[in-house]
Length: 317
Image (tube, rainbow, N blue to C red; front, side, top):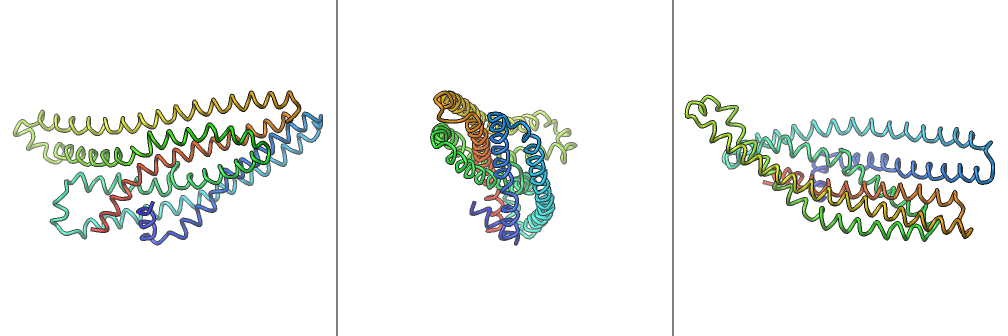
């Protein structure tokens, strides 16, 4: 993250970026609060036979949700305009930086390396800064998790403990399987992509020469070799993420069933109302949504941070 912070400060948009993040972040947390209270209020009205109040509840919460989504749309429109300006700035500065490098520095790398920096690395940096399931959603996930924990603690400390009991193994497994391996695999993938681009380029620019010397099969075999290497590295990354996703789903179902059976017992013993159990399920769903979002964001940030380091390294040389 230090390399990312340096890059954003170099662009001169650090304060505005943080300000827009803060404006966008409360959306999921406020939506969690609205939906949880709506579900609790609806079932409490049904339990107490206040069916006449359901229309007022529906209209009231409907208006609040409409205002919330309007606010979210306004913030994302501002964020989209900001992202477009940042993309133009970064591409121009990156291109100017490469052109300003001495010739011996440029000749040290294949052309595919520079093409990768101008395309893949810049896109990864922009995705990390503004894309889905990256820094913007990381801030959203953290706030949503914190609010969900506070709401569930207020309703049932037991259910909060059960939720964390199943959430912590998910996080640990994701850290061991994905987070520690992704940066190295991503760096290998970027290098393989640069080599693959360098291998493909002669087929386009020097096609006549290749046909003249009957080197088509040799060049195609070289391209296939680099393409297979890139594919194998990407498959390794996808497999690790898939295993992590399966584990998250299994732990999520296990936590759901545990709370379900505990809720049935508490309702039968008169220790909790059905509306309170529904409220806890709703809050737990938001907590898990925030946890899944957090893990996905961390995985993506680990992958994209490699590209940020490559861009920063170019400026430091």
